[in-house]
Length: 124
Image (cartoon, rainbow, N blue to C red):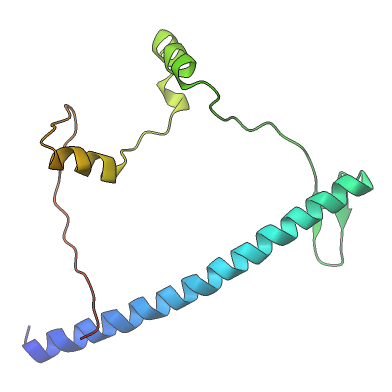
């Protein structure tokens, strides 16, 4: 690839990235508005003691459901170990924590590192 072609490719990449980030910003703002409206709908449904209600274009069904959260990690870990219940955990590594240990010279058994290619974009 000729240098001018690479330069053009980098510019197209930068413009597309900027376009995506602008769209993401709009999406993030819409998500904040959506969550606020959802909370308002929930409060209105509770106040009206309604489980189902509709507008001209959309309807909602309200229900209260249980959502798990960790209250005592040692007890949870003990149960997991005794009952082979590893499936209740999400299985992924926190890359920054692994990297911090690697920088301190700590080798964690079972972790396999692989290389990925990356570029950092900047404006000259």
